[in-house]
Image (cartoon, rainbow, N blue to C red; front, side):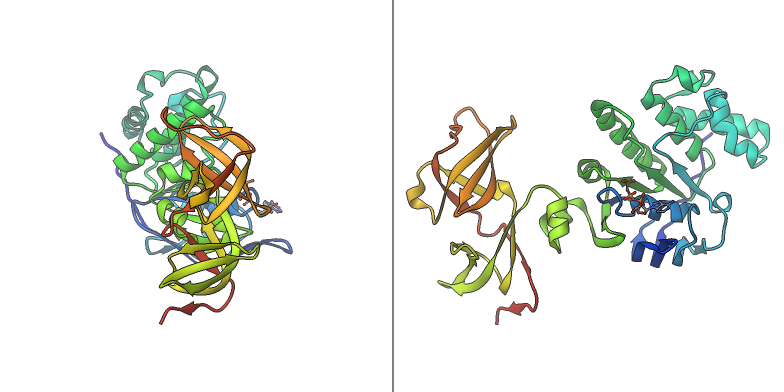
Amino acid sequence: MTLVQKSAGISIQDLHLSFGSTKVLTGVNLEIKAGEFFAFLGPSGSGKSTLLRAIAGFGPRPKGKILVGDRDLAGLPPWERNVGMVFQSYALWPHMSVRKNVAFGLVEKKVPSNQINEKVEAALSLVGLLDYAERMPSQLSGGQQQRVALARTIVVEPDVLLLDEPLSNLDASLRVQMRRELLALQRKLGLTTIFVTHDQEEANTTADRMAVLDQGVVQQIGSPQMLYDHPENLFVARFLGTANILEGEITKADGGAQIELVTGEKIAIESSVFGDGNLVLRPQNIAVRQDPSASALTGKIVHREFLGAQVRYLVDVANTQMVVDQSHALDQPVLEVGAEVGLDINKKSGVFLPKKEVQHAA
Ligand SMILES: Nc1ncnc2c1ncn2[C@@H]1O[C@H](COP(=O)(O)OP(=O)(O)OP(=O)(O)O)[C@@H](O)[C@H]1O
């Protein structure tokens, strides 16, 4: 027997939520496609769990709309939403066997017992735990308990799957393995899934698209690569990976463009946008040159970190510290702290975030 999966899209429209007088979510709008693996990513306290719990029907009642397919969930209690949720703590019943834990939701729904057995076994075999059905949760590893929690959620054939930091209780190598398993299971079931995490690597490696949240406001929505390459504001630029943020004014120069930093340096870039703002430069898009004489930008290495695949340098350029990553190879010299170096910036790699009015090229 296979489990029937009913995958539905989720539409969140102008959602506002407060705990008493404390606003926690402000004007959230999201369209999640049926079958999509979607992540809510943000720092601690940004409102990710509150938003997920609002979809499941927990917490204060929000203003605005939450639709799953064309069903409006407003006013429905959690057990009538047909939404499956897996918690960070797994929340397994300690006194019940794996089989009984997984069967629990079906028993509550009064599904006939012959169907319960078939469905439980289908769910346990999907997560690779059929041989563990008679064990108690305390006789399982953390990863296995997490799989039981997943089986218990998918066995009731929900419309959507909600995962609240499901991997954070596992050690680092198991987390990597489990996130791959999770994605493979999601793909097999085609189940619309929302994954809450504060770990950008976890979101980057699993999500088709994600929403970055800060202070209860969605900052940007897109694929991991799109958000990394084209952040729309400084928060997203800083939150997704390391970024050099250089403040200055972009003007036309020599048939192209340049940014004049507030510290006086001029860097040639490519830009169709001019004015005051911040240039976002990723560390791997700056090359360190041992001979500073040929580079427009020069500085002094003040710190070095050997990361294996890369060497990360902190270079002081007129009292601005820039982070520069060089890929490491045996034939590449590792430069010393104190060395005067040149920095060559990949002209096409910067993202300019204008401060106010944007003047586009004519
Ligand atoms: N029951 C509650 N009563 C009052 N305030 C709450 C309650 N639950 C959460 N909050 C507040 O809502 C805000 C968002 O919390 P939430 O747990 O959604 O954040 P989060 O992004 O999931 O963070 P974390 O990654 O730490 O879980 C926080 O400022 C938190 O203090």
